[in-house]
Length: 450
Image (cartoon, rainbow, N blue to C red; front, side):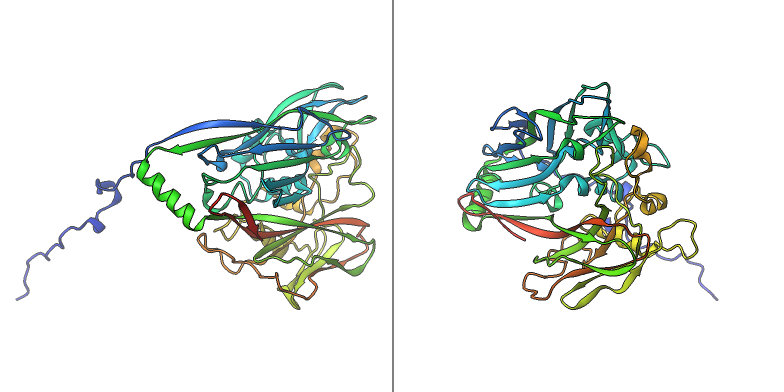
């Protein structure tokens, strides 16, 4: 006769309880500390123009604290001075930045970001959310978010003279390192060096506009600084720093300029990057004859017109192994952007993620060059096509040096592009995305390996 006894219930353990019943599970108390938002101003003047004093130098020191650079921002006052008509920011306030350098106290270059505004604008579409677009609009003078089309033209200056105050973070591996680590206490002073774009490049001007220029004043760098008030924790940190220094890492980039000729052919762009960890290549093209027109979207319009295939050749090998085919004319037989789009969202991904979270639509990825607009609404039809190659071996958030080591590669590195008759003479910008390791030694001096 079968037993009718109920099965014995296993004894409840902490691991078998749902999280809603695990009352011992809680947050750890933060160590005793204090935080102050500090401001650093330019030390080489207060008024800067593209044609005059066009370099802004902002020295930054930690003041015996940790710089929480994940929350930093630059702030500028901008005054527009056009002889005729009005203008918009080409993207957001970052449009005024041609180059950013970060220098150590000894003059050593820790990071160099060339043609900064172009890559900054691309990132806003390939790895930002709708919420980020709203923040960009409210804080940095960026485009007004509008579904399903995401515009590219920024803040509108009313009248021939307009003013505005905007803030923006710097896309920097030194400042925005992996895991949002603060810059360490005890490091020597560093300087943020900003070179301004011309008025023609930075702004999108209305019809018949002349004398395009602007003035930047009150350039400032804001960042929270926190100080540890727990003596035991602080002593442990000081002992570690004095014994072996402090290191952190971040993603930076290097720029390589090339050119494509008009017509159907197979062409190559020389890259020849030498990095310890090359994570990806981002190549964009713009019409050489017109992209710097005062009424063109210089910083926020790129295109794939005429490109039918591409692949990178590094160390004698193809990346990806099978070249990426392209047909970006929407509505044409053989339309094909799937692999190109997939490579783009992989290459723009944040560390630890396999793909980015883009707001880049099919139409924007494929759109031809917008040219010079007769009205300031031209930005709504600009595209941001890009030829990207993802070179990461892994996506692990806690892994370093996950890209290709090209530092000792003697072979030429190239990007091969096959074009058809729609190709026009174009200028190419290739950003090599790579890992940088920054170190503060025992006496606070800063250095970098890339």
